[in-house]
Every structure is written in structure tokens, then in C-alpha cells.
Image (cartoon, rainbow, N blue to C red):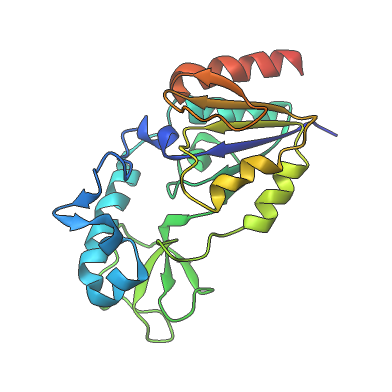
Length: 228
């Protein structure tokens, strides 16, 4: 069996493909608080504004391309069993060639029923508009986990971490819970690496590589592939 690698990615990886993070936005979008366009309460108050916010972000995702870090992570599958656990809602890992990706915060290129969260649909176009309904007659919304909603695949992701021979965490501030707690499930015997340009509090027993994902990950991947 191939050794198992779990790659945990956050907004810093997508930012290098030109996608703005919530931190980049400074807490505001077009004078709206991010909490108002990324929460169930905001959706109930003003669904049209929430849809505009995510339509804009979706167009940005569609215009973006995977970067060198995404491509390097995909190459790990040549010699390892790889599971990516990502906090990102874009599809850049998949477009780079990665085949096993858990999106714990949802996927912006999918829509779902606002009445039944199990009814999820691939997007047929780049926009969701008011009046776009599921078969229940309910307004479609982005298939994205908002503030106050349950993170997805948490138990499955924790199991992957617990079984890993190597864990690579990249571009996450570890401030968004409960997903941030996944790094603590890595076994003591696993090689654990944390990549960030500025993180101060590195998780216990993780080796810290200072740098951006594009600067740091391709070299680390080549090293691991050569050692395998």
C-alpha cells in the first residue's frame, strides 16, 4: 500500500491564484459586513445581496487558474495515497488533477436547496438568481457553509488525519473552527509540516516552513517524491 498523505489547505493557497480571502476584504464587501452576506441571518434578511456576493466570487473562481502549489500537490498522487481536506470553496485542487478532495466548507460551483440541504446541484451557469428554484419550489442558494452552519465531513476528515503517514498543512490561519482542530488528529509518528508566510503559533510537533505555498510546496513535494 502507498503511504498516506493528508494535505490541509486554507485560503492562502487560493490567494496565490488571485482569489481574495475574507481577510483581504477587511471584513467588508461593498459596504456590507461579511457576516451579513455569509450567514443564515443575512440570507433571510436580504437573499438578493447574498446571491450577488457569491455570484461575484464564483466568477472570480471561474477566471482563476491552479497555481504551482495546486499542481505540486496533485503530483503527490504518483507515489502516495493523498486526501486533501480543504477549507476553500473553489475547485482549483480538482482542476490541478487531485482526485480526492473533501470540501469542509462547501463548494461555490454547486447550488443547493434552501429548504433541504441534502439537495445539491452542479451549477449550469455562473450565476444563481432570485427565482431559481429547486424541485421543491425553494430558492437555490450557494452550496457554501456560512457562519453558524455545520462544517462538512468533519468526522471523515479527522479519520484521514489519524491514519496519515504525513500531514501537510498550507495557507491556513487556524482561526476558523472546528476545522482548525483537525491538525491535532495527526499521529505522533507522522511527519507533520506547516507552511505559512506569517503564522506565529505553529501547531505542536509540526515542522514550520516559512513562505507562501507557491514558494515552498513544490520543493517539498519533489523532496517527498524522491524519497518515496
